[in-house]
Length: 105
Image (cartoon, rainbow, N blue to C red; front, side, top):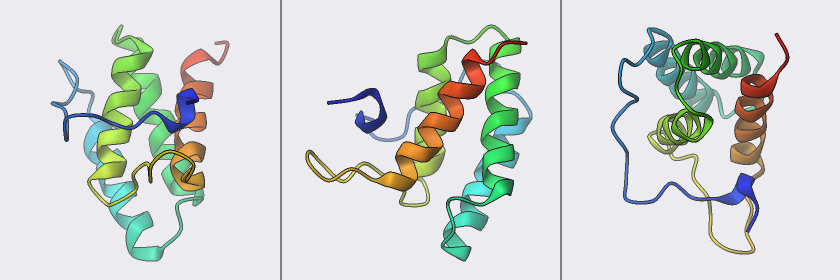
């Protein structure tokens, strides 16, 4: 199982301690993407990246950030489908998050 297909286990986790203001923006972006049926939208990517940057700046570890992003995705039904059935939209969101977290800067 790849890091991109790791499901969020145990339901929706609590938001990170000292959740950055971008968390609400992230949730709103996922809601908008779900309504539009477009999880590749630039607005969603911007929200994922902004949330990731704020979490990193706050000192949160990458796994905690990823769990929160996956929880926001799961809240609108964007979840891992099971072994052998990758969810390309969720994998894209996870790649955005990981890439932003480790981006030089």
